Image 1 (cartoon, each protein chain N blue to C red):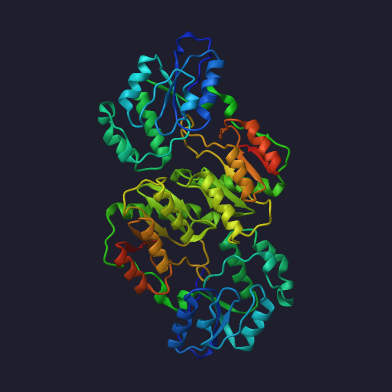
Image 2: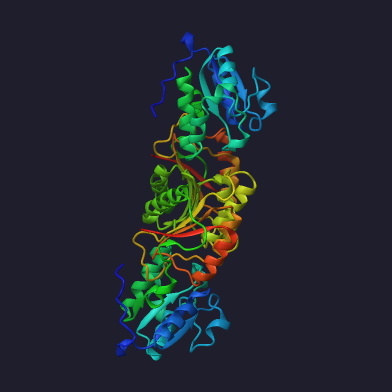
Length: 290
Length: 290
């Protein structure tokens, strides 16, 4: 779980940054941050996840998920020793993996990886990269601006009870760490209303919205807090939890008072957008100490 | 959390059993078990939850939830010293409580009760009963047959990996105990797919079914286990988790291999029905050691 110190761009031997791209806005934010810091980039968008319009402005080559042989060849040919893996990649179905010769010998390990939670899966992926001579770095190490900072970010202040609820939520995330789930929970007062597992944050918030609408969750309007924090022990280079504009919109639809995330442990592709939506919808947004 | 020893029916001084009835089949199962053991019963169905057709075959008087003054009067007038509280009562909205004079002085405590989880709420309810001279007994103490027994109950055997998954789920329930949630989880392999909080078991299973249908949960058919167990420290007289025919139907729709519950810690109104449905749908059903 050590975070590789990322050498400053003035050091000459870093080579091109390989960016393996899942879906969403993060890959482009990372590419732009690297370019701005004077690094060359080469994008490896994953079929079915990465967005073509965004990645095709950069040098790139599409890859199939699971095709590790091709991936490592492309990385080497393009001089990428450092690699970032960023963007949404839903857990693939094993039968859909496009296994090539390079990954065939890894297959027994890959199958084992699929038995556990997401963190287990990603840690195993990270280890395979390193054994093949690549250095895996976190997206937030290339683009530190994506880390949500500490403190109240928008116009709306959390009440003391909201902060209490947020801390309670953090405790739940900590307790669930060994089970590789629980990056997101919704807390109302001292009651845990929802715990995120395979469904993801958006569906968890939609559930809270629906349970509230049908009276199963009974809370006054604008109460309850979405809490997001990384699992303890999680490899932060591979899978920091994220929030986006849709997170805030759904938190508002669920009638919550606001969103609390662990400062420095949760990423956002465009924090300004998020804060604007929080301000408009009347939600607070706060970065908590760990 | 001590369980009151229930005197045998031959002891003369037990009086009439007061049964406060929520929804579902459990109140009648408890009433029948008490009658069979030679006890008199008096039912107190709760408006909005209890089913009229079922309770009206017994001596009864309808009550509003929260009307503790009326409730204790009815219990005393009918010679009920021992009281059972059984059946589904969804957490009421505070504004819907019908507060009478008897409960008015309890109001500050009642409001405090609503801040925590269900267990917190129910433990507080139990304490108030006892302070007023009633003895609260568990439904399973009156009708021990409702406790799910240990071992494989139906025709289908769990595989070793199912039992491993079930034990993993039990660990999650234990870890979540202090947060007053998590009586139900769904485990696939070593991965927690869903954790039950405010939504209840049925909605959690519907979510797994939907996530599987849309590919968000990727598992072969007939794999994954629903695990139900009481929260550690839970007052078992008031709120044992339950399973019913619908639980098994939804577990089957979610493509699970079976259902594992903590033996002696989970109740079922009609275990024969449940086993029959499990047999028909190809699911195992097993009572686990604690």
